[in-house]
Length: 282
Image (cartoon, rainbow, N blue to C red; front, side, top):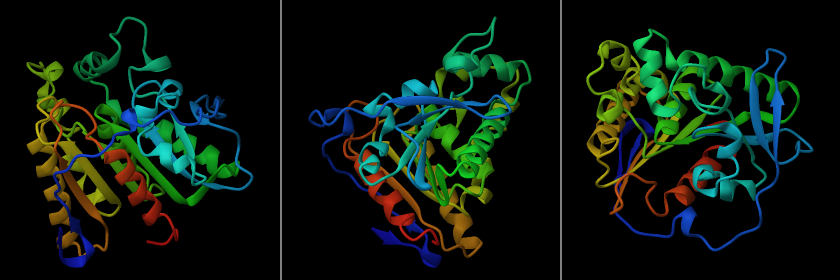
C-alpha cells in the first residue's frame, strides 16, 4: 500500500476471497417499494422508510427495481443493509421504464442516443438529483451520509452522478466502464466525439473532490483493466495538485473470469463506505 501526499491513497492489490454472489444463503432481501417525485421521477427503495434519516447508498446497474432484488448488483449494499443503510436505485438510460419506443434497450440504446445527439448522463444526473431531493426532504436520507455504487455501465453512471451532485460524498465503482470506446458496442460510431465527451477522465476535477473507490479484475478486456488504472491515477494526480484531503483507492484483484466484480470486492467497498460516512464530516 502506498500512501500519497495530501491524504490521497493508491492501493493496488491482488487477492482472492469470497464474492457476494458466492456467499451462503442469507436472510431474504426486504421488499422493494417504487416511489415517484412530484416531477414524475420514478425510483426504487429497498425496505420501509427508516424511523429517522438514514445513511443512503444509491445503487446503479440497470432497471432500478431489479437492481435492488439482486445480491450481485447490490454489491456493498448487502452488508451495509445490516448497518442501517437505506439502498435506493433508479433506471439507467435505456433500461427499465427509461427505454423509449423505437430505440434498442441496454448499452446499444446508449449508442443510439449518442448518435442522435442526446446527452446520456444529463438526464440521469437530473433524475438522481430529484430522487435525492425527495429522500432528504421526506426524511428518508441523512444528507451528510450519501454514497453511490455501480457495476460496469452502472459504475460509469455512478461516477457521473457523483461528479454532478456534491451531496454524494463517496463513490465505489465495480469493474466500471471508464471509456466508452473500449466497449465493443461503441466502435465505429459516426459521431465518436459524443462518446469521448462522456469519458470519466473528463470528470476528474469534480471527482477528486469526492472520495473514490475503484476495483477491477486483472484481465478485464470488456471495459479495460488498464483504462481504469489510468483513470484512477489521473484522479490521484488531480487530488495531489489541488491539495485535496480525499481518498482515492485503486484495487486490481485477481479475477480469472474476466469482466465481473472480483471476489471480495463488495465487502471491501462496504467497509470503505461505512468508514468514510461514519462521522459525516470527512
